[in-house]
Amino acid sequence: MKGAAFRLLWTGQTVSTVGSAVASASVPLVALLVLHASTFEVASLTAAAWLPWLAVGLPAGAWVDRWPKRRVMLVCDVIQMAAFLAVPVSWSVGLLSFAVLLSAALVGGFAKVFFTLAYRAFLPSVVDDAALLGVNVRLQGAESAAQVGGPGLAGLLASAFGPVSGVLVDAVSFGFSALCLGFLRADEPPPRPRTRLLSEIAEGTRIVARDAYLRVLVLSGGVANLALNGFYAVAVVFLVEDLGQGPFSVGLVLALGEVGGVLGATLVSRVARRTGTAWGFLWCEALVVPAMLLGPLAQPGWGLTLFVLAGAGIAAGVVGSNVLGATFRQRYCPRHLYGRISASSSMINYGTIPLGALVGGALGQAAGVRVAMFAMVGVQLVSLGVLLVGPLRRERDFPQVALAVDNPVEGAGVVGGGG
Image (cartoon, rainbow, N blue to C red; front, top):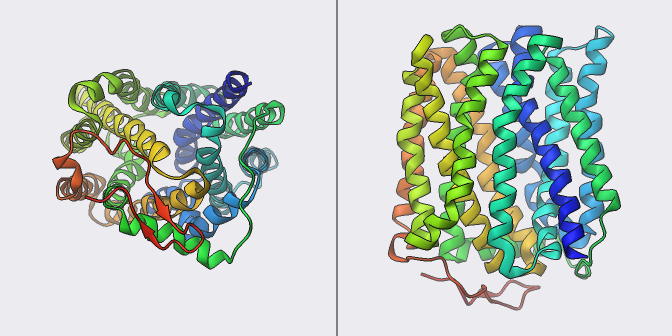
């Protein structure tokens, strides 16, 4: 049963991830080439997609802990399908505007918050604990492969049918994921009895704040997401306006860069065995800084290779650290509290994404896109510094024993995971 359930979940998520990877290149191309948006407007699309983490991230975790996870994911897939389907439908009748595109990103972002939290809490229901690292490698590998093919497919679709076609592909992929979830059956833990919402929210926040490992991962992740999304929010503008690339070339450059993610997913288990999980995480994060530095040095022609290398290094480091970090949290955090712990972490981790996108867009419009990208390299260096002053540099591996929490309803104290 678990094997069949996981295969359905994995298949649906892989297809949905391909669609999202296509949209990651198609949406800014629609803004630039169809709606003639400014640098700041293009960046604001990224901000809109991630702003919901700040708006509902904390209560969403408590709500998800109360609800059936599979049903939450299915409903969210349908909402995202409808949101992104509105873009090609509006375009086909001549009503597409930047407001429609921005609304699709915002509505899809709200649904994504609930889907992500439910998905993280649901995964251990279809995967044995001992298999989590291998499963996370497989999931990240599929996501990385999708990130390789997605932008290239977006470029091909934009060249052949126009940029809006890529958004249609994303909408269809959400429908396929919903179909897979509809057929999936798994034994979920019974939802927790309802208590006061504010108490549940505070419980997850207290656990993250008091635990040294969770705290440093959240803080460094928040700074890193600010940097990376400030960097990538202006990447398509940089390739189109500064380097003079067309839709197909933009998709190809982004796709080649994402090959590094496949490499990261392939090698991360070997790196973890050789260096330890904590040190492996640090090495993956350290790789991102010099890789980012190559991006704004790119030039037209063969100089585009630098942007490809930047993307490859960033993807390898991010995917590797994501695998190790996700596996640690899934083993370490109590399952009945996972939704609210994940929500507390994600509100900071993902809540900085819209800020990074807006800062990158504003700086790019005011001082130039290259300046904005160089500035984000400095911010990423701060993220690495946060990790190095935490407990990870003193430990070869992440803690192997699950975190213990006294009085889980009131969140009285954290026993495990200090440092």
